[in-house]
Length: 198
Figure 1 (cartoon, one colour):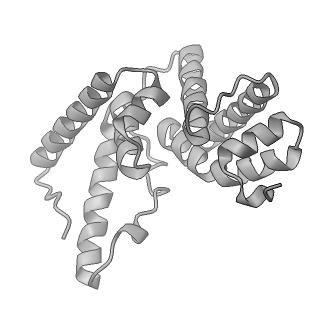
Figure 2 (cartoon, rainbow, N blue to C red; figure 1 turned 90 degrees about the vertical axis):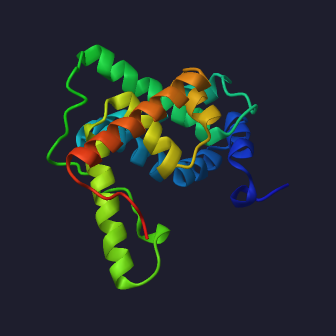
Figure 3 (tube, rainbow, N blue to C red; figure 1 turned 90 degrees about the horizontal axis):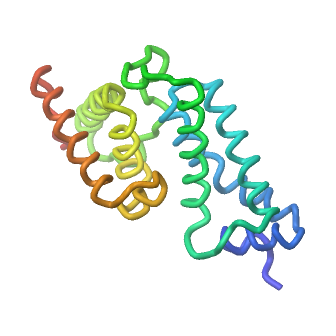
């Protein structure tokens, strides 16, 4: 038998369904940071992100226990889709229409970028400034555009994975990205920002 630590997420999910609780602990450990970062990025509130994260994993556990998980795709993408649905339910329930407005307490600094950059100190400084400007502009985008930009560039998901996670067509995902880039270019131009990485 394969040691739990060496199993894929999909194998761990099936092991948990078969009654191995340790398998779920490993699944949670592997996926919690990525899922929580995604949730925090979308909701932009630490307390709310904690609530959504907990509700997401309650639904994950319930779905696994009711054998509603099929190994046809990646486990992480499946959990991301559940998190997306929990967020959408929360917004529907609270009828929040202010999501487009930026908040002062979350400037996307929770997205780590240092490992993406290298080079001289001057280059790193310029790149840090560019990323800071991009994150600020991303906060001004409508939620659906902000979400697709985050998934594409910070989680390196394909448009097919984004479409599956958010429950829309690939064309809709591509359209949201197109509008996000147009909006960010417009913002950069109106503020005389140079968005070129060295």
